[in-house]
Length: 330
Image (cartoon, rainbow, N blue to C red; front, side, top):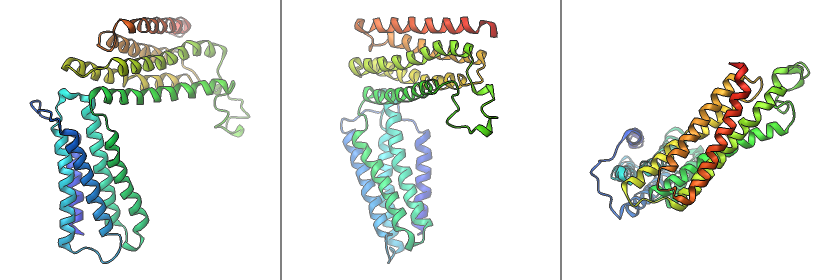
């Protein structure tokens, strides 16, 4: 079993280097990159399966056979990680992050399988081993759907951010629709003195402030949807500038969902109106940056400028209302 432990240690080192590693700026992108990477990942799946089968029942492999199995798996993972390093930054930072995380998922799944084999008695191995082997297969199979250029990578990334924003908005709307007490479904009467704690209720002033804050959250969702649509329709990777502009959009839209979450959390009672104002201003600033970057990029031809201006006005309108309603709290 020593070769398996050494393999696990080696994979831990490979994963650590992968997290920090950068590609060579002078790397030339090979048209065969995706095919070769796919082959390396497929080989990893096959080698992991060999080890899993070898340790699924007695007799266990000899030390020499274990070493051969370990070497085969390590070589396939090293091939995949080396290919990641050959993906130049000019192909897109978002694309590189996507590939890096996909390779890392495969390595982490493989490490989990090895840990199961090393730490479980052979007689109780089968069930957990099958689950761990399945995790490796799943991580390897996901490579078939991996984005192959920066436009597709940024679309997938922004789509994920949009999903988080939608969830936050839906959660807040459900809390508002449930009535005066947003904690009625999570707190028992005896915990709050028969619902006598007014800190769990929204006041009339709170409700007036919630309206424009909700407007900002809705503008966030609309902004993300429009950006996503523009990326799908107009996003290009024909020049270095276009690739970089897509990365800029991925970077700035990443800030939207945390800002929406912070505003939403501050809207629950007891509401601190100064904190709500601060978080609303932060979200407003992020959204304006998104629109500014969109407007100056190739994904915003003349046909897209109208919604950019409309959302900019909507953000200003709601933020001005928040300022007006919180002026006394300053």
